[in-house]
Image (cartoon, rainbow, N blue to C red):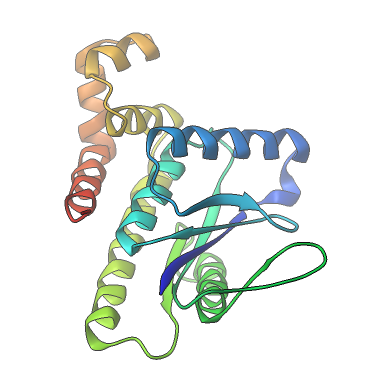
Length: 214
């Protein structure tokens, strides 16, 4: 059993320089992973606009994806399908291919994100689907986690680029004084940004997710 993630680029056809955007995505993923090594297999490009990654625990995946959302520069976004289930690899002349119920669940999850974005919840960026055969505890965990992700994505969508940078900096151990110097503002302004943007609540939630890590 593993936690799989499929990420695809939001609005990729509207990007002026797709190659430069991909470099920024790659650099941001690498920076987040260096500071917060949570993945068994960090997100890596596969085909088209997609990236795939693998995590040991659902909490690890949710932590990593929030950090990535906060770290991405303005104008660059992913949507995430998170699948829970067994994974396998299929040998090919072109290298191993990811397969199995966990990946099928992640594919179903990202399709749900697409549908929610286009209809009822434009701010939706993440969803979790469990492969068939989950026990009642896991099904309950998935439902609660999806409710959390809906609220979390809404908060992140409303944040400015500066507010996201400040939140990521605090999550990475930077002090408010250090962030003030980085942003060219005062420490009270950093504190106000954390409270007013909802970043303080996001960081408390992130701490709760990390608390459960062995």
